[in-house]
Image (cartoon, rainbow, N blue to C red):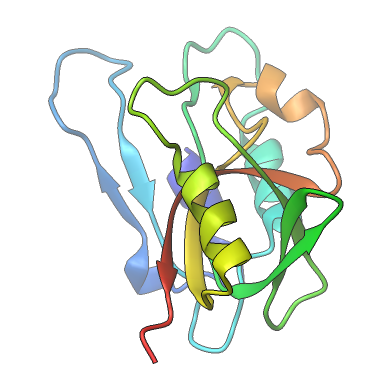
Length: 160
């Protein structure tokens, strides 16, 4: 199970791994695996991909990954009308992208872009890792894009 693959990672706080099923309806119900990094560590998404790859390669399964949401702390870069974030404490970068459509008016990405243009200091942001969705093993057959693309779903500004 993906929960156990996550738990085996050295940078994951073992006590933080929680698997929650909203309702028990059948054998392949959706559930949410939530976890956080150990204090002073970062979750390496390449290692996460590799670990899940090692446990979910069999065919004939109806399970998969709906989405991978992450919280990122780092420095926002605004170059050539593109936004990216360099992860603090790591040699990692996410290219920030907008949702393909939104009926709710201004998207989180558009609000972030406006905040950066105003000079607001961004403390952290949340997003959905692009390309991490689908059934096993298909979702694992292709390596994640470099740099990883993050669909912005929210952000916090530094209040100071």
